[in-house]
Image (cartoon, rainbow, N blue to C red; front, side, top):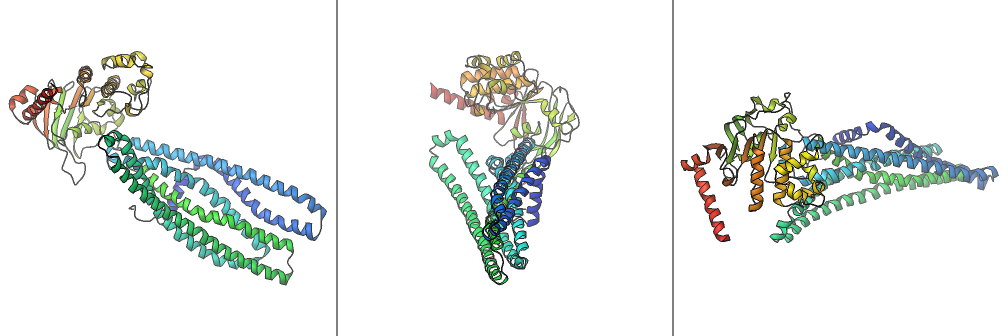
Amino acid sequence: MTKDQALTSAQAHQIYRRLLGYVKPYGRMFAFSIFGMLIFAATEPLFAAMMKPLIDGSFVERDIEIVQIMPWLLVALFLVRGIAGFINTYFLSWVGRRVVADLRQQMFEHLLRAPSRFFDNQGSGHILAKLTYNVENVASAATSAVTTIVRDGFTVIGLMAYMLYLNAGLSVIFLVIGPVMAGAVKYATKRFRRHSRRIQDRVGDLTHVAQEAIDGHQVVKAFGGQARAARRFSTINEKTRSLQMKMIATEAASVPLVQLISAAAIALVVYLSTMQGLKENISVGTFMSFIVAMGLLLPPVKRLTSVNAQLQRGIIAAESLFELIDAEEERDLGTRTLQRAEGRVEYRNVTHIYSEDKAPAVQDLSLVIEPGEKVALVGRSGSGKSTIASLLPRFYDPSAGEILIDGIAIGDLTLASLRAQISLVSQDVVLFDDTIASNIAYGCAEPPARADLERVAASAHALEFIEALPSGFETPIGGRGVLLSGGQRQRLAIARAMLKDAPILILDEATSALDTEAERHIQAALQELMQHRTTLVIAHRLSTIENADRILVLQEGHIVEQGHHAQLLELGGYYARLHRLQFQDLATERTVLV
């Protein structure tokens, strides 16, 4: 179903039933809440019923016993009503927040298991909107909407039953107005669903645009993009406001319409009952009890009409959450495990296509990397370097062919076992908003000993700057490590890879865009990291791979040249031309600096 297609009533009911399925683990608390709702609902017709003896006994019959007992009954009634209301509100809110927490946790855990292509096709802003805005709409549908439907629904039924008990002949009026009210509610429901889905999409766009501006705030400022960013945000913001106003207009029109229909029915009932009272000598208490019951009927009818918008928002929000929860996960069908691989990697006739409208990123690639061998991948952007590296830990599954580690197809290994054999140090270092120690030990089942942290930090040339910080290893580094320099972040990433001590290493050029001093530290740390490990290096600067055991030159997903640095220079092909261009650029840069 596309986003523009409306949900059918059956689909909406199915979604809501599934949402209520999350309540089952908390059935006892939910039952307490329902019990509170029913008691609360029963107090409304009881209050109306008390009007008859109160008026007839006090003002007509002058019964002193009734005069004395009625105030106590009224206090008791509202005491019971207050306790029931508290039970209803507290326990249902408790259940609702548990449901929201469970949904959020399930969604987040699913995101952790989602394949890389899911994130390629989904904007992070839309994902975050589901975890924040959409899930709160679900909370409203699972708590306050349920309260209104059950409590006010039973209140309306109780009041109508009491009114029919007082005068059954007037029931035909409610049978006539029922279909009219249902038609108005049905029309409003369709509009609520349509606008709710569009609003959720716009909120996702807002989150995405805001996140881009926040993450790229320095680029925005450096290039004077504030006005452009503001216009882009304003356009989406205005569309969101417009859709929300349409939602409000629908709600604002539907509620008075249903109320008008109800008021017309009640006015007719009042007129007929009054005329009937004049003819049949109905008591003042009975008449007032009937009028009070009708007066008490209006507020719950109003709330029941208003809750429709809230309920439809919740259903559409639940639909988007279930789409995420039901999205495909990474295939983990492997059954074999490796304690520690020797490190032999083989690509057999591997082809990978990201989408049907694009050329293969890698085509019929065959490659063998021996244990401990350092292999560098070079080539222009889009030549397939990153794809080859991404296929090894199964961030993507190859479209054709297979990849083996120590003679075992990686698809036969469990994902946990496969990825335990591989460490990754990328150009775009990812650190988390935590301490230095926690970032180095990220992924460790147990916190490592301080001696191990110091050892890998020293090997990564990071110990000196860590010890110079006020809190040492316990120093917070901020989101994405913003409180550290680029070189410091790279060294922490290298220390993290060293602590993992995996036999296979993937390096995405870790020295680009660093100053000379930082690059010297990083190169020294990388040399130590690569010792006795099978290493796959994605190279952008050829000066960093001159000592590689083998260099593979890629072009349009094919290996066009391979050999040692000296061999490729002597060959005078693509690598030699690329090296010459980089050398000339470097020489020019040095001349300018001098």
